Length: 269
DNA sequence: ACCATTTGACCTGT
DNA sequence: ACAGGTCAAATGGT
Image (cartoon, rainbow, N blue to C red; front, side, top):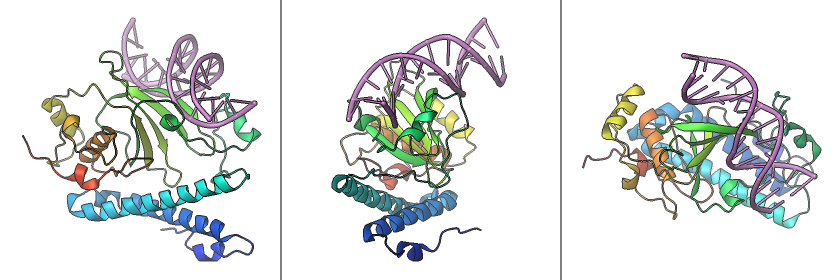
């Protein structure tokens, strides 16, 4: 196994770097390492007996993420400096020359904007989860892909396949995390209104994954609510976890997902 | 032929 | 002006 950046304290005490910069550096490193651990242990943590460990680790990643956000916010408020450098030194644009947007990256440094429901007037709930799979038990139609400024992975856009026949307007976008290529950040915008799935479909879906798990998820409307006012994407994550066994959820933005809400087996009605 | 994905163009919000 | 989101024609797979 290769550990490439164990030596945080040395770099953080570099001459001339501020305490805040050093703090951010340490937090960034901590977050990255926590991600690696999460990725390393994902199979182990998906079993119910390791639920507490999974919860703790997800919380650790969340703490780092939040701490970095707070520092970033404070810096943006107190300085005129362009706030964020390109995150990776080895960052380079996607090789696809045809994309008209690519040249824009080079032109100017800008603060990456917050996405979607924070920048646009969407009346829908918006939640981001982390998962090792993009499968969540729903059928999605991809309708776009964009290179996102300051990130090395492009973002893919999906809408529910039942948009037209059932009027389901939920969308999601999927992007690999900077820290770990095998972990996806999946942001759900809106809620499924096409949720009338039969038990048969659930069984088929479970069976198709090859999983011998006896876990069953309730239908969306049965799920425990989030700690914030929004609701349904937690259920999407719950589906993902129970069916695919390797997914891990966590909070982002405004919602907190409780692992025990979606890992615990559900009792049959 | 049909359907899903890709991707350049366009739209929207800041 | 620009980043991010969406549209829709082109393309590719079956």
